[in-house]
Length: 170
Image 1: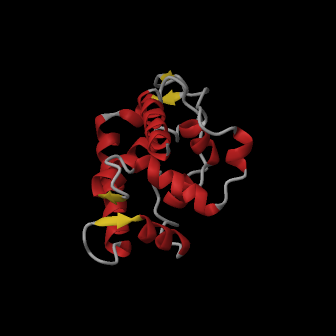
Image 2: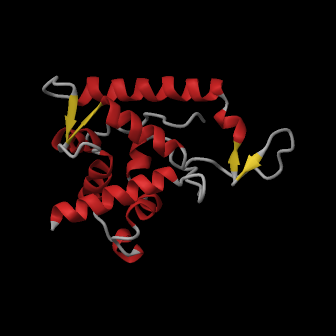
């Protein structure tokens, strides 16, 4: 039953990622990895079919960390490698588009500033995200096996190692 629940959560998360530009929302306050992980609106987007909003609001820190980690552990091996971290941080970028209705010199589609999706902007974002992933692994992979276990992830979060890692250029 738990495995089926996890598969349902993963399928819902994949759909949310695929449809992110269909129903964009603003997570403009999520400037670093720690903010992103604790974003209850993001959790609601990813798990809203499984949890009611009132339940999501009651989640404690460990439950939030667990949900974020499990949602991004794509191969379901209870570990996150660099590619999973990159995907998790890159997909979440799509939740960070503020509405800019007064801008006339470029196109706004579905409340998303299209200038943020130029090839140059995408390359810059990939370089920034790759540096974040490298830092997370270098600083928190305590056994140097190239992956972050859930216990390493929790220890890194509690130590403040996710603070200050800017996923969004400010």
